[in-house]
Image (tube, rainbow, N blue to C red; front, top):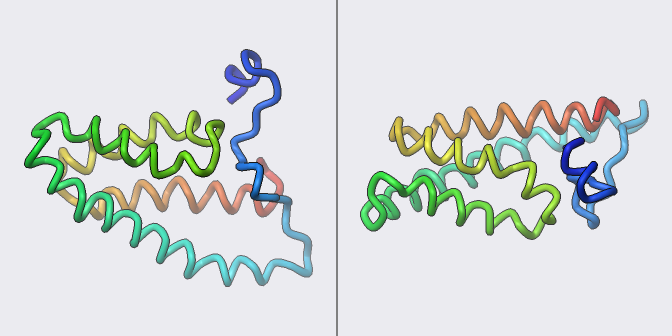
Length: 128
């Protein structure tokens, strides 16, 4: 992100419509509300993208499905802004490749959860 900021100037991977600030002591309850959302979001997104769409795309694109699949998943996330999309590019293609290679959607769930969960927690406590 620092490299991108040095080229483009101000750089924030947070979409303009999302205002994120560290939680204060009276707002920690939001973590409990976030937990089911995190689980359902990741399971839903992974089972739709990697469990349903990826196998169907493999019929058309064969061993290079991870490229077209990653591109489509990137387009799905473009609504969050180009800055976030730039930071997601490696994950978008690596995750698609790993799930296609292992033929296991749970791999995608684990990767997605391992990235989104700690990132959100770090934002909540003002670490990033």
